[in-house]
Length: 451
Image (cartoon, rainbow, N blue to C red; front, side):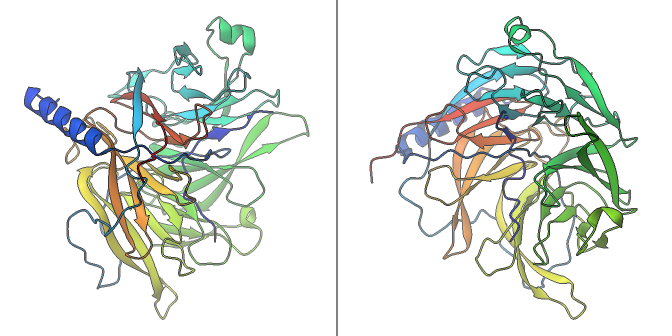
């Protein structure tokens, strides 16, 4: 089965207010968590070339009538002994940027971070200039960072789109001396798409050729849905982008990539339904659109077989409301339409707009990482003025439920992307996020040896 559970990791391998009472309460919560937190088992390195994020909020899908769940957080009957996992939190900067990616920017063999206007050199993590981004209406005019070697010079470049502007730009890594001197990276236009109201995009290999496609999502409903392919006109030439319209009417807040119908080909999910990849020649024809739901969903929506029944399920959040869910694929109607059963994961916080699966403790089982996209609509969403938070969830395959664990409450929220991989090079999975609560590096602590 195609698994898009890592859809918004961005990894490149080079040549890759609350008042005083609330603050006191959060401090007490933090002390309680510290008292509960054990030390943990070592983790393997998690990472992957190309990928991203973004997104969203909810309406109502067509589901199995038996799908109702109690409006409270699910808890598993038992948890692994190596949970919860502890992270050291480091604030890198504060601005309105919400995109982040990881790559060895300066070629010293260490994983650095890219987040909007700056890149951060490992291990001192001082912000160094990368590009100039204008503020806009409580946001910055950028909705994600993606790493690619656009000009094939062996250095990782940055590709970025935006919410309202229609251009996709790439920022050229200027090389060692300019990086040392803190110079701005040269900017180039990859393509002017002509499309605005861009919620975000994913960089996913949809057709299986080893090159990611730019999967762009619009928050507007009933507008065309495009994928952009990265191609080279010559063997050593720079990348260019070519569009393919999946359909003329079917989009909306939320996007994901994964095989929903079990044919071995990646389909594309959007807020209003999903596009089925054709059996052959996917770039020569429209894709069949299945208008099976109407959501205001996360970006990404994650596709994977959670319960091991051979059918892929969906994990998504209400990007601008309360609610984190997984949909179990339970069968087909007479006309072939897929039937889904909804399961509540958590309704304790709002705006789970971005998410990612990653193995945090090295046991071979991925955890679900998500949190509050702080001030996603400048505090106007339900729960929008509540403190930021970041959580991970372990999956209990017997009970078929998720259990929540606190990474941080009161400081760290999310934006449009989450990085989860071994950033510090100690073999453990770290986390990096960028959002309006700040850009943070969360490093995994020592192994749990308490049994």
